[in-house]
Image (cartoon, rainbow, N blue to C red; front, side, top):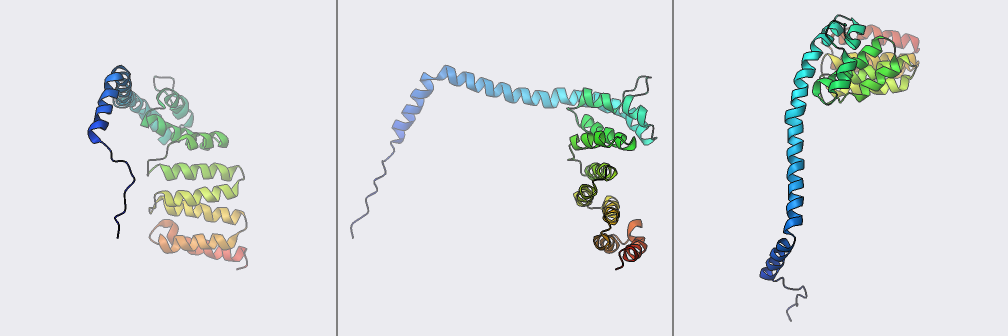
Length: 228
């Protein structure tokens, strides 16, 4: 049998390297500029992230202390706007330190403040602006958006958000609370069958929680209301 002839051209490695060296020699200045730009961009990025942003985070964290304290005491206006005695509020922290982790967290707090004040559109805007990578706060932000939608009469959107919040960081605290909110929202729609499914899930999966222990009465009530 005749050997198959490979028609692909044979690469002359030495010649190829020679051409590469010639190209580099002829374009040494341009390549040097490109390399310099890359180095400057990378260096600038790391300087921005680890020097400037880190420095701003230190300032932001210091400013957050009093605002968080007022939030915990339910002094919403002071938490949002500062107390006029040297401490600033979440609004100014977001404006001044939005690039920092604390500035991002201030978006969450600000959204929750608007929710407490009944300004639901503003609450949604800030809670959606919050970057919810934090597994602890993220479900609370999602549920907060759900609460705002519920207050605006957007029950279907609220249910979707409550169910999402329940799965974001499945735990014995947030998840049953969010699921209970979803069940109550289903009842608001007079969809008692789906409400019962949610309540039974809480009873079975979170039996040791407060919500789990009270689900029998919720199930019984939904069955009566839905004639089920």
